[in-house]
Image (cartoon, rainbow, N blue to C red):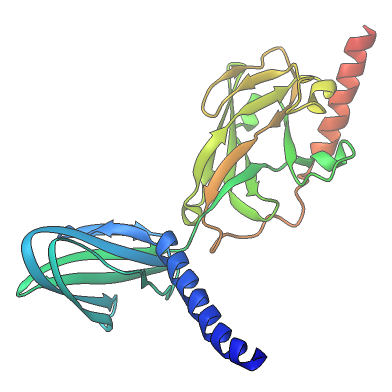
Amino acid sequence: MKCMIARVLVPLLTLLLLFSLAFADTQKAEVIEMQDGKYVKTESDYIRLSMEFEGEAALSLEIRNSKGQLTYQKDLGTWEDSFLSESIYLKSEDTASVYDITVWAGNQACSIRVEKVLPHVHQQRACAIGLPVSSMKKTQSWQSVTFLDLRDPSVYPLRFPLHASGSFTLGEAVFELKKGKLTVHVDFLAESDCTIEKSAVQIALTSVDALAFDTKSFHGLKGNLDKAVDVSAASIVCVYLPLTVSYLPESLPASPDSIECPGQMQLWKELQEITDSQSNG
């Protein structure tokens, strides 16, 4: 009796597993509308093709890679007024893979080009290097701040590497000082394909605020990228550049071996001395 139940259950469970996998692929597939001459980029491994037309038509599908080689071909049967394909797997052949997709209705063809790109990572933190926050206070954070000496405007603009997720170099943060006003903007590496989802610029004029970034205790200056902030009252500032970004990690260089730049620790000590003298004065 047990053997009989096992013989029935195993094929049934296998069928349910295959159905669930097929359903999962369908759920995560990106639906792409067929419009002749259309160019589409997708990060999805699976796509479904949709098309609207008039009347009834016998459809067929073919997909060719960038070398013109046929990678997929299927008779889709007869459809009326509209069509939605099953999930089709697109293989990644390089950092970007291009496919020419054609749906035939008799002698009439509708063709699109689909570029499959590697997936971006989203909602990642990034900041400019300078001095690790862990060198200033007890923390497990990989993030860093940047100390700027404002006493010699002739050395500006200054450039510091931008790193993300404690792992990748995204580009550079550029600090410009003109007539006592500080402006920060970012230059991303082209291969990062980086998009800023959220940004801010926080500037500490005291060592107390330099330890209070991203807290309610922070009472320094707040701004944003490409917006000038008046820092004429200060000789040394500490800048925190909290960015939330999405980017393509595949071709990016690693974060620098050391995220402490020359002279940063000395500026941190000087800012502490300035703050102490102001408090005692």
